[in-house]
Image 1 (spheres, rainbow, N blue to C red):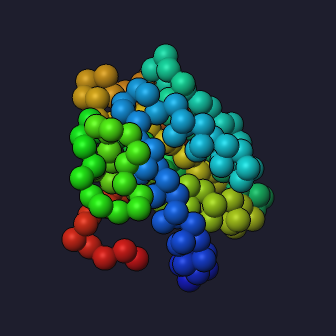
Image 2: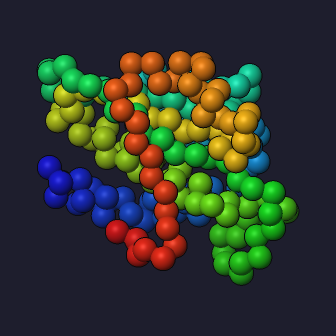
Image 3: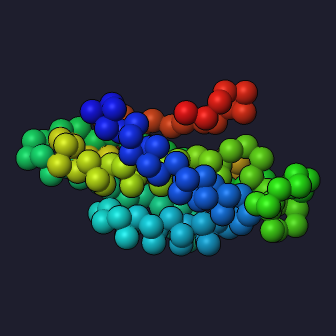
Length: 178
């Protein structure tokens, strides 16, 4: 199973990098991740995810969706979480995928986190026949907003209902990809 997942990850690597660069070029500040949310929700719908929910904290920001296994067995629900907001900073890099929004950039890896979770969604939807439970995908808005964070809103509004465990991932620039 591990080799199958690694092979699919390699297959989608270019697409995941392209997605990351798209999100990097189009950053949105906490509680304003409307376009990011739309792009995520459209991709999840295209992949056949279920129970797609858009908008938390009284906004149209953030997405929760499920991938339910079809193996016939009942299992637990594991949630996978990525943060989607950017920071009010200037992107001073000279790269083709530089932020196109003055004074806003992804400086903490949220563009990567979002792209990686979309990559995981693509892999997991292909693996539905092997899944015995459900995977809940959480694209959290406003991670950088402190006390009015998207995590609190998502929890208060039921995004974790039925989840047995939650996993998140964070990039580290000193560790090579892969």
